[in-house]
Image (cartoon, rainbow, N blue to C red; front, side, top):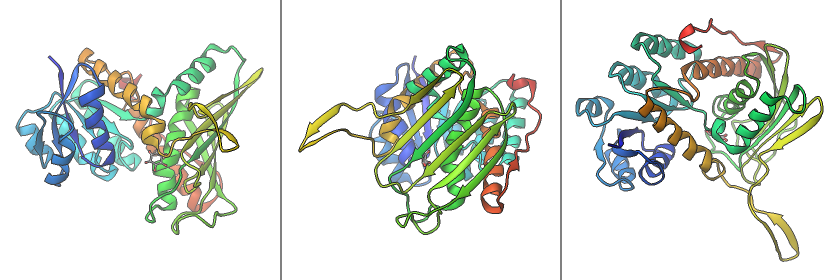
Length: 335
Ligand code: ISE
């Protein structure tokens, strides 16, 4: 029998997951869609035949309508929902962030530990991107020698007017924080954030672009150009410098075209298309893991560590200077 998955939160990301699980994931079906807005839930549920709709997590749990859950509500609502889901003993794929701050992430970790087994995967989908996986393999194999530096470029076409400096760290650079942990296999020790010349096309509440420097426990340096009103489309590139070579990932996979006196490649407009294969792989792997009773993707510790780095990043952004990351000791539970 297929895994019965409930998707909680029927916004853009939630609706995307409903469609993905209903049509592109094997051994799983969408059994329920949950949203405080009943109409929005019903709208998203149209993509999944037979899915029931609920307006609260309590109703969903009461009806025992799911074996596992995808949590795609805004991050500030995650803690409350996670505690209920964990209490019910259900595995959950929690969209990033795990929670918005390290204190609440630690509370979630305590509850998961009390459940006695790992139940949470965090939605750092880039770990499932083919280019990311290839680079990780190259780093681990040592074929070009030791990894010396990572350079990241993260560009969005534009942001809503409400997008703030702090969101730049928590919503956007959080992906690079996780990427650096993923590639290096180490925790991040400190962060620095600088803003220089500002684009006149940036929305009002964000200094755009910004430059972030990240250092890991052993000293590896990584930097990020984060530019969320870059106009040109959606780009996520990484260049890794090794002792004996350089590896680049993330250049557009699109075909080359020549027309109207131009030769070029189309680039993506949003993360929904740029990372569609990564999202598909992420959800399929999660379903397979749930059926096998394990978590092999990014776990709650990864979510907590990212939140801790975001807290340091936000402080570095507002106060300047290099800010150390404060991290609790890692429980053996996540070894
Ligand atoms: C958004 O929340 C994401 O997760 C995207 O991957 C990122 O590129 C974007 O900047 C964020 O706002």
